Amino acid sequence: MLKSDSWRAVIVSVSLLVIFLGLWQLSTPAPQAEEALSEYELLMGGADQEARVPSPSEIIGLAISELSNPFYDAGPNDKGIGIQLGWSLYRVLTGFGLAALIALPLGFLIGMSPMMYKALNPFIQVLKPISPLAWMPLALFIIKDSETSSIFVIFICSIWPMLINTAFGVAGVRKDWVNVARTHELGPMQTAFQVILPAAAPTILTGMRISIGIAWLVIVAAEMLVGGTGIGYYVWNEWNNLDLTSVIFSILMIGVVGMLLDLALASATRLVTYQE
Amino acid sequence: MNPHFLEIKSLAKRFPAKQGELTVFEDVSFGIEKGEFVCIIGHSGCGKSTILNVLAGLDAPSDGEVLMAGKEVRGPALERGIVFQNYSLLPWRSALSNVMFGVAARWPGWSKTRVREHSLKYLHMVGLKDGAEQRKPAQLSGGMRQRVAIARAFAIEPKLLLLDEPFGALDALTRGTIQDELLKICAETHQTVFMITHDVDEAILLADRILLMTNGPQARIAESVRVSIERPRERGSIVHDPGYYPIRTHLVDFLVSRSHGLSGSANSGAPGSGHQGPPRIVDPAEAARGASSLGSPSNAIGNAVSNRPSHAIGKGPSNAVSHSTSNANGATDDRSVESGPLLRAVNL
Image 1 (cartoon, each protein chain N blue to C red):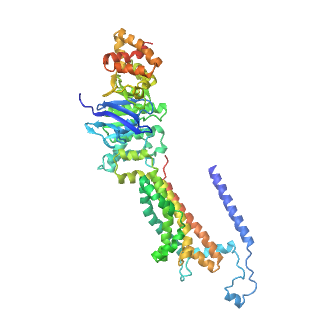
Image 2 (cartoon, each protein chain N blue to C red):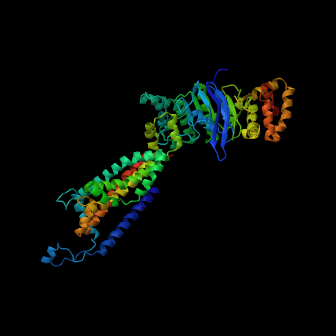
Image 3 (cartoon, rainbow over the protein chains, first blue to last red):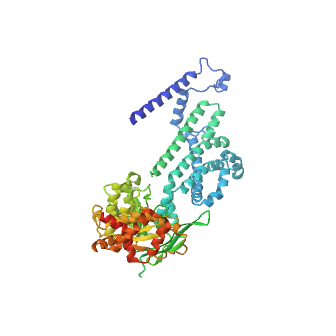
């Protein structure tokens, strides 16, 4: 029953995709290249006077050629998709990792101590709604390095969900379990690692999952601003080249990588989830 | 008088309330001997769980002190094992791992294999085997979970075992089998146990002594009922013991009609009525036996008949209180009075 349901779902998904791509393909007729290009047209790179949305077949063709050689490096403005994604991932994971290093212990502290929660809550409430990109000018001015600044932006956007979820998870650990630790004479560190951390782990990892999702959203925008390398820069660069095929291809790649990041953290969450 | 193994001296718990403070219980004093199994029964809200938590060191009393083997109890310790009503197993650990958690905390120097063997021994003792020890608590039935909790408490070999209504959430059949297990283990290990229960039959089956608490607020321990039924006891045959029904009727009578009348709130009108010291000791079974062997002494029967209406009709709390205080000193007379209603039950 369940199996046949999931098969049906696959069939529906595939047919939706086929219909969508088919309609798209039909609505974007291939360029008419009957005549030889004039010298002017050659100078203009063979571009049409009017930009067109590329057809799916063109995008698939580009995807095959890009993905078959993802790590080529032909100068600052022509790098393989793998290199660009690699840069973005590096920034996201660095900023995310740094945020985790701060957010997890701080969240623990806030979760354990109602006083610290009250003391820090106003700061969190004010800082949390700030768009991470609003920090960019300040970061660029203080850090004076675009690379580090984009990592900082990732750091500042991924810290809040982790911090809040960690505090929430730690504060919500059932009193019975803390009492179990107390009656077994566990020290504060043992209690933290043997009881509170495993008890709060699902909530903490959910926070991390939200964080990495936001970080991946923000990195594209940050790289568009900062430039140089990364998938966000790549999208913007291809837009400036008016290469919409590459733009659509990179949009899809952003989606795929974001999904993979989310899946990784979802399976990590599943590892630490327990049933009460 | 020899000091008891566990000594509770004029314990009280008060909470700040809107007007002054609320006294949950006060003047709670009793002792427990080594190897003794003591149950405490009382209505909800009389502070039984608070007393247990104080004994565990999880809660601090407002007044009074707890001495175990001459040392004051301060904070939780491994020498006092606890089984909570809701099991309190760590759900991310398997049954075995939950027990190992306790054992490793108790003997930090032990090797992992030794911890494991010791834990398995106790899991087998409570009847968890054949792969059940590797399951997570969520995959175990309520009875199985409570077995794991009991194994964890026994495995650390505490000097005092505290059971907070351990079988309250279990169905009657499961409760019965685990009671049997507990009886068996206690007989083997001579464990000192303090247990909260709502179940009169459970208390009689398991306990050497049953403490009866009056209703809160200002609850006290009114009586210490001796369960003089020979061990080993069995669930099936204990009801046929001639002492069983006298005890049971005494307990039920206390819970139904007398616990309210004896409560401190009803008593507060009489200042300095001072129930200092340990609760008076009552032995309904012995009294019943004595009474029947003596061929129904007129004194006991007379008392029973004359006293019965005042309990049953319950003219008012003050009446019951004055009755109990006036009898508090006369021990022998008191017994026969207390067994009054029970005699009727036996003779029926």
